[in-house]
Length: 454
Image (cartoon, rainbow, N blue to C red):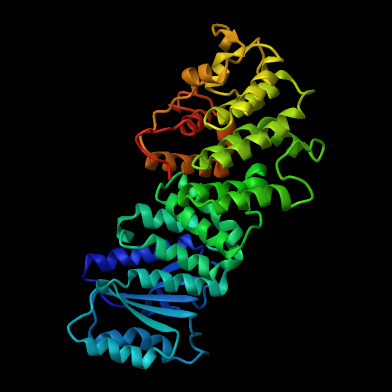
């Protein structure tokens, strides 16, 4: 234990305590090397839990700067027999400033570096190294790590502002490979609170797909758990403009099971039926947004939607209208899909007129909308018009450029994976300027004539 004369040393002391708490350790400060004696104490001691506080699993000694007396800190631990004091898993010796004599730190490393001991000089940028080493030692005794807590600590606490978030996350990914199916769901959830995590989500997604890991990730939501892979491929296609992802999507859809992954396979399970009836329309709409740069990709997605609609002839109007309207929007955004548009229009018009408001914001089939909804009494009911008229009335977007389109598209897709509430979100909700669904349509119809999609 040293006397901390620098404010940064005091700050570091408290932040090391917070780091330990986030990683689920029982943390003690000024912990006596020998119980009942305070003449030798450890600055910060981490214990596996509060039930066993005889000997710390990790030790942190923080000094404002190095002096000849600095050797006393490791000496008080490593000089004692194991009968007197059991050695820690790791000893972190941290200096805020290096001091005037560099030989002191070199001698300490030479003397104690053969043990689980390492020196960190914060003034030389070693804070990042300290965090990485803490994570490595944590992995030795714990298969789990609180990524969410770490990211919030490093983002919102000014002391950690120099931490390289990407470096930390890459390190976690490397030492926690057994948890890869948990990491993307965590990143997706964090991205709703920390916009910077969007880039980390995309980075790790690319890494995971390139690595060939396509097992279902551990999302809590049924749709995200079973159908996230299609969204993953679409996101990468949008970001990288690589046609290979469309081929991978087709293979996943058509060949990864004994039947198509998304199709009118009613009766498999209640959850699957509800997905196809109530959510597949917007799911395919989201895919079309992300594959918008590839007209053949949009056409392929539209054909999957038509396959579902053709098998829904016995379903209620609201389900037909919901899925049909999404298919219309997909068709209207693609120059090579007019025949499909006309087919879908005829299929819907056979059911009768529908409310114009539903085209602007497709009412979730989960709402079981009927003509009796008072909310829509003031709106005019009409048949679906020809493609040219439909485009004039409904195909428009306020997105200004390709960069914004891609950012918005990926953001909406990540939210689909992490927020099950988005499926039934409404524009009329005062919390939202636009609903999640209307934002997808806005993105779907982006078309900047002055900027070539590439």
